[in-house]
Image (tube, rainbow, N blue to C red):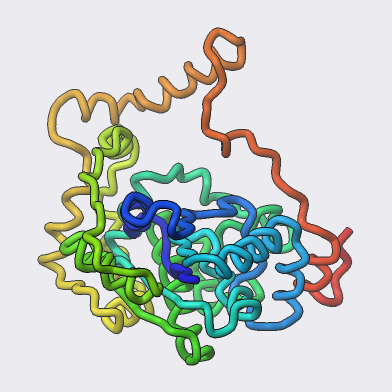
Length: 337
């Protein structure tokens, strides 16, 4: 089984589509399973037996793990995306030497810029306390298993861009930690830039690593333009927010260790693609909040039954309560009431 250690917006959709198109039913390919049920925050760095047992006892998480183990008996299983990367220690517990890890990492500034443009800021504000967070999608430095706790000193002052940089730091430091703490697991580290520069060659390499016959040429389809990208740039252009990276030496150090180029002139050029598009209409739509007003009006129509509800399954999803037993385990000595 191949599990990807990565963050969102790093190229895993391309990997998923190509592997499905090339190998079809010969392999099981998943992209971001357990999108809202993986409990990243509560099971992050779950090297301890106790939390691994709670993960396996969870009907959703444990169900996926058992399903993967069963599938791995018949054919290769590849899981791309970031939603269960943190469960690598759990998969290692049940799969042992059959687990292989692909560490896919993108330049932290490009990753954070892309995420900020495509992310609603309110998704990041007012993150609940660790023990009160029903889903636990994002890590904070106040969490008991966070590594870079020095961020507690200035967390309340960070911009959205800097919060995403912090996620990048925690998640990719965790990937490297796994390689050190579990050296018996086959592990490769791959910059996502390699994937886009040479998709077929990179995918053949990943296929060989995953134990798949790689004589075929991967079917890499032309990526379709994201229809919401231009709209998102008009809603949330990056501006100069990226320049704050200079105040994050831990991010810079890890990026350089992973081989990412943080040359200031190069970054200036790269960050231009995350700015407000040129032209009068994009400027007017940005200044007037056109897209947000349009979304509010569409929701008003949905609420009154004039138009059908949105098809995004994640919208309006009720949060799952944090199980009492899990809270007591994560926060020993505190009542879960």
